[in-house]
Every structure is written in C-alpha cells, then in structure tokens.
Image (cartoon, rainbow, N blue to C red):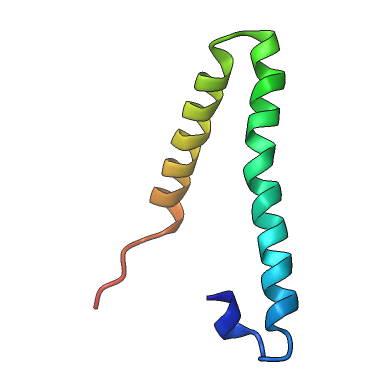
Length: 68
C-alpha cells in the first residue's frame, strides 16, 4: 500500500522507513511488558486487555458503518 502511494524514485526509501518503524513497533511491547511484569506478574495481561477494550470502544465511537 505504501509503495503504491510513493513515486518510483522514492519507493526504496519509503519502504525502508516503513520496515524500520515496523521493527521498532514489534520490539517495544515485549520490553514494556518486561518492565510491567516486575511490578506484578498479572499486570501485562490486564494492561493488554485494557488497551484492547479501549481500542474496541474507540472503534465503536468513531468508525460508523457507511451505507453503500
């Protein structure tokens, strides 16, 4: 999707930046969970459930189905 938006001259740079951000996004949650587990063993599960619930409420509030 990102490669279709960018021009052919910029595709390599855009895809490289996208992959770097994706790698960063995939490495942060385990590190954060490691810090949280020091506080309480069950806290990472509760934190994840809270974030998922918040995402669900946000979806229901802001993304209304469109009529086709």
